[in-house]
Length: 242
Ligand code: C5P
Image (cartoon, rainbow, N blue to C red; front, top):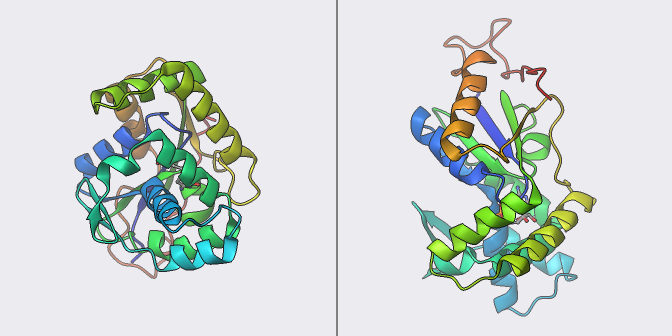
């Protein structure tokens, strides 16, 4: 029986992290924050002094990455790196290694391994386009660059990090540009995705809109008896809202 997946893609600070966590909680489904894998890999590469051009070595490192997700904690090579992976520097490092096709290929099976009963909510850049192309629901969140920089600023300040709004704005702009223009799995909305601009929406409101989309399109659970005409892979139902 195919395990249902909700993909939530979008650029940095578009709201996808908070919303996917909340959707997963509501439904009692698993969650994949795919960005953490790239962030962990970026850190592991920096520790080994690997340059972002060393594609083959980075791909080998990705395939053997000793990264453990324990609730909200992240362990890399057995060490707690939760705070470190959350920094904007880690985001930039992630985006550099994430541009390499062999690295992305090496992380594919691992990401797909998160697809377990009763369902998965996956967020990132290419969940709907590459990792789970057969997902029942594909959501793409976006917001103005100014609002996203401000959100990220507040988030990092809340965590006690010393950051500047102007510096963050520039770092996010550069990272978005790299993610959008790379050849391997560029950041873009999947075909037929439910696209939502969250510039003027809070997390609660975004959550409600996504939940409504999930309720009113596709199926929340796969059919009990596979094999019949409706028993194959769940199909994505375009919302007409793009
Ligand atoms: O989402 P987050 O900010 O944690 O992602 C960090 C970086 O990892 C992104 O800027 C992007 O370059 C990369 N990433 C990716 N594909 C994903 C998730 C993250 O390329 N599915």
